[in-house]
Image (tube, rainbow, N blue to C red):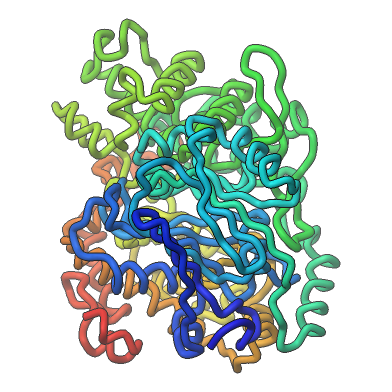
Length: 619
């Protein structure tokens, strides 16, 4: 199979060996595309089949896989995302991250569904892909540059302002374990340290230009679905005015908002940190992704001491909470500046904010002193201290060098009980949604192979009340309190969670308000394959099971399926006082969840489930 032999796909993977300086093309079979679909499916099969166990995530044997989905590059709103994965330097297990923007669509139009990067270059390089052709070029003149500077330098060098880029900043070059990769500067693959893997390979950027749109089996259907979105998104999608963060004040009231390293229960100042307030004070527009009318990406401009360049977008909810309430900082300019620094240098805002909150609590408890901080106080609420420490992290200087390793490693080196203050699972810092409130999400955090990921988990508060029509497709027909962790909550996580996981194979946006029938119709209209809800759920389950098999191969077990100790203790104030995740109950519900997934009591997929999913090869 080659070229456009199937609708929706380019039919080719680009393979780049940086050690040898060689480039080749793989042509997967139609059966492969149908079984694994895209995104996570392409990544995890590559890692399981092509990388040895127990390799150094920052060594030449790790492979970095950029992967698209069947809808990428089509005029279907919500299809502007793509995925990247490798063995994670932060967790030592399966790692993946997603980003939006235009880069993925450009890669599909350039003739490829995935890029497999292997080996390690002797000196910095960047990859240039144009209309089915690819070459490696020197990036020595780009090494050390920030993300925006690199992006514009590549466009100038290649004499084309329409070029799309995936770039690491100095954070990836310096191997910060939660370094990110940026698509066109402001669309970021943030989690699990994929920027560090790219930096370890001395690959500065991937520049792409393509002019051939993928073929569609039923263009009229895709047009009609796009028209429906254009007519309905303002009514059905809440993020088109201000992006995420519009609910931060209500999150504060109900207990979802992390405060002072997930310790406290109410934060004064959320009205200044809301997306509405930030956009009203500093907004200069909203950005979008390929083929999407929603335009949910903030653009923020601030002059003066904490200048913020709108080229780096603006902070979304996770960033606002990570550097705001979780660090005790209520100054929106400081939060926006933290976002700006992270995107300039290319590091994950969630892990960076969590690392600073962890360090602040360690300092206040005397586990870190002024000698450790080079004479600086490090208190919750000190915006100057937060930004100063963030600059140390991105430069790998002082205490920032240790914090750039992630809170799990840092806590192990600090000792004296610091481990209990590291709010992480499998080495990945928790997103900004409290599992004491969202206990089904907490179960997902604890068991997910890539670590705690809010985008592929459920948000329990949505199922505590509301229209039963929302649940018609998943066989859940009763409201369930968000703080309940029971057998019926496990059923909800299994049924709704599989649908949430599917987006990591389709590489599709969570924000667009298509229903399940419309998604099935879109995939069928693009590919021409008969599509059903059941088939998609099995595809999602196949991806989850393969991720689990990768972690088992790397030495993980159910012992790593846990939550931070702090989650077993109630908050000190606020609406969640008296509410915690009870460890014994969590363990029991994990076993039930394993059974639903076809795994044994230790979380190991059974042979019968591998056979049922047609992935016996992974056993």
